[in-house]
Length: 215
Image (cartoon, rainbow, N blue to C red; front, side):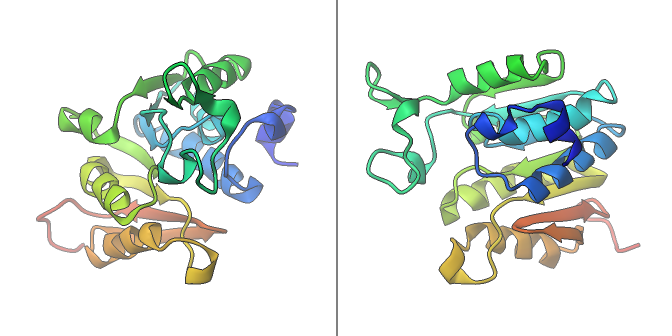
């Protein structure tokens, strides 16, 4: 049993799409990288990845920024494959996962570690100036959404930092190809090198800044 499941026996009750081996890798990244600076995730949803990363970050007294507009990605809307009616707010006529995130952050005792930011990632990135030791991209999976998150947030990863990308499928029949496309672009840029691949979670380490020559 991974350390996060020992810490949170209720983990299986938390809605989300992170496999246990991916979650354990995120936990280890959160613990290791938070020694260098703050961490940030895009696409917190109901808090499953937040708990995995946050529990590692907490060990160093660090901070995890959890960015999500909480209105669901394309696949979460009514009539789509991953729609969850429990997260639909009929009064407002839209998805709302923020209440679940709040509940799970509190249940996990992560209020002093996790800073939820309820806004589109593009809006948050517009004025972001703090270098990050870990950026986890797991937002919208359309090509436009994935490229936007990559363009907005990969420059914020400091040298030695990790860019983590979820849902990388090498077989198109298993899933969409947008996360794989930005993973490949990060490698092609020469700014990142592959650190590891755990199930569908790709881990890239930043080795230089834009405009710098290779080491």
